[in-house]
Length: 103
Image 1 (cartoon, one colour):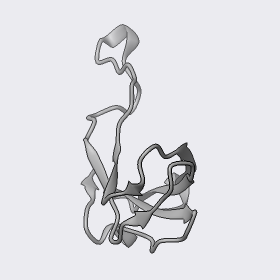
Image 2: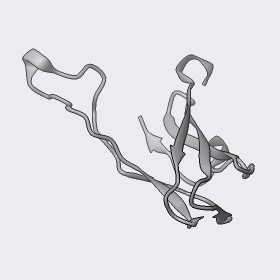
Image 3: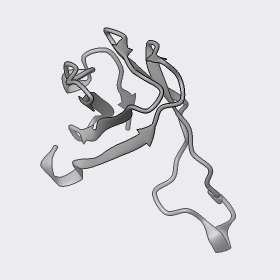
Image 4: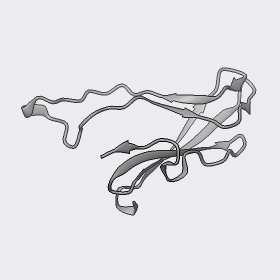
């Protein structure tokens, strides 16, 4: 798992009063399967929802920081995540307990 471990914080301004039950992961990117411009290591793109076990109450001006970890055990890949600001949540999906993607 250590070799392929990736982690990145995501800080964003919240425009709604409450973070309901999760954060949808979305991305704008260009991936190619054409031989001349093939995206190395790209096999597929999976949609994902990052649910929260408990809603987090927020004001209109609260900043929210969510930590995401991409983990790999050589057979599966999964994400773990936790809200760290304005309050701390539990780490969600530890060790791929609820959701994994097979390699």
